[in-house]
Image (cartoon, rainbow, N blue to C red):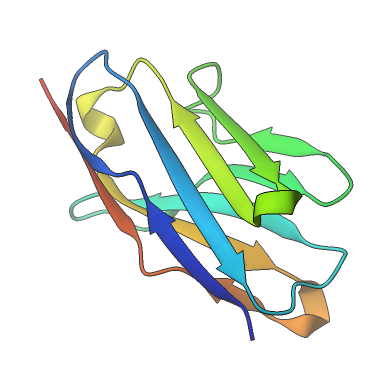
Length: 116
């Protein structure tokens, strides 16, 4: 079983930056996709960014060009650098690892609030 713990959320003014971290522990299958999702107030959870074990990276349309996903396997950590934040980026940000038939896991989330 994989455990994920996010950190780095907080309150920031519009135009500011935050860097989220997600530390994983447990057995992560070598072929996986790690990613970030978010859920804003009254909204459904949406995809933010994904990093596949093969190196492919994808971003949601609303964050492309502003957010950067990266990972450090030596530190078992996934990052999300968020720049030029907007009030609509407000929400709980979740870390996820998807391993196909081996299942997927979610973190508990970290709150990001962007004030106008």
